[in-house]
Image (cartoon, rainbow, N blue to C red):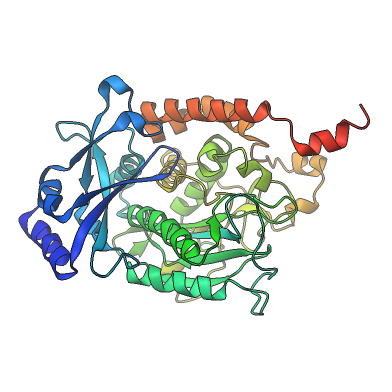
Amino acid sequence: MDTQAKQNILNQAEENNVKFIRLWFTDILGVLKSFAITVGELEDALDGGMGFDGSSITGYQDIEESDMIAMPDPDTFQVIPWSPQDTRTARMICDVQIPGGEAYVGDPRYVLKRALERANDMGFDAFNCGPELEYFYFKDSTSAMPIDQGGYFDLTTLDAATSLRRETILALQEVGINVEVSHHEVAPSQHEIDLRFDNALQMADKVQTYKTVVKEVATRHGVYATFMPKPLANENGSGMHTHQSLFTGDRNAFFDADNQYYLSEEAQAFIAGQLRHAREISIIFAQYVNSYKRLVPGYEAPVYIAWSRRNRSALVRVPVFHPGQEKSTRLEFRSPDPAANIYLCFAALLHAGLEGIEKGYELPEPMERNLYDLSPSELQKLGIQSLPADLGEAIKEAENSELLQKALGEHVYSRLLELKRAEFDEYRLQVTPWEIQKFLPIL
């Protein structure tokens, strides 16, 4: 770290009366981990990082090789606005290293950095992402009891969480995160706050911060915020529609004025890559057993592998181009949910798209019909596949995926599969109340 960057951070800490610094990093499932150091340790941490035991972190190292270093990223120093005024706390997001200073291959942030390097090598300076994270407010973490009965875009007394959202947005702005729009979502007690797009690495860091802020503000108001994909059986689940574009310098590489859809050859191949590899990377963007309860026809979550311009039942949507908005040309990948590991999710999406560009995949025609209205035989005739129906099917797809192995690296790939197999095995052993109610009286 250069001397000026280090001095800037030390100055900020002093000016803001910071007493503690929380060092953040992410485990293989996307769960934020953190430990605190005093401000007196900050200079040493900026010089050489801080050691911790990696064997206790999900998906990291075995106990015999567990020494890890959390190296703070100088661009991520941020005072936490809800910390007490007299003993302010700041946070820094860390890159995880092994002793000696090499990047740790099991760090999800490193996996995303590698994906961005591939994009750079192919001539793209920036991979911009704009995720739309939905979530629920419940009375507590033990039962899915909504706190309001509002619906999509409602502005009524039913929307009891308006002040919660407002306070959350103000807190996000205080930590330097720009919010584009917020509103009540379709299901009772379901909400959405959309962030202004940014380069993928900065956006992934922002998403981790965003989720923490949402939960923190909820806790202060005595309620519980959850990013669980499908907590209510007969309501829409929570998605994370992800807008993406590639830039070279100041030019949007996805725009082409001469194409009927205003999509460049790179954009078409990028979309084709995400469509072709969607099944094998679904273990990343829909990583939990519960994720597949959301990915069913009829609840707005797209399961059919196709693209369109206006049709939200397709996996990929390309928002309609408006003259003068060349830089806004983008694709929206609609199946991820907000419980995904955001670093791995962006990395897998980017690799899938770049594979399409590198190998010249051809983009099929858009599907502008409502895909939920088509019968299985009609879908088959049109050659439209579905995403995996459950985590077990997603695991099988991932096991045969060269792309995923390349995207994640051997360590993360094998550890993730191990964790997901264990989760699915545990799930299959459960006997649910639905089964007892349905089958016990008649069998």
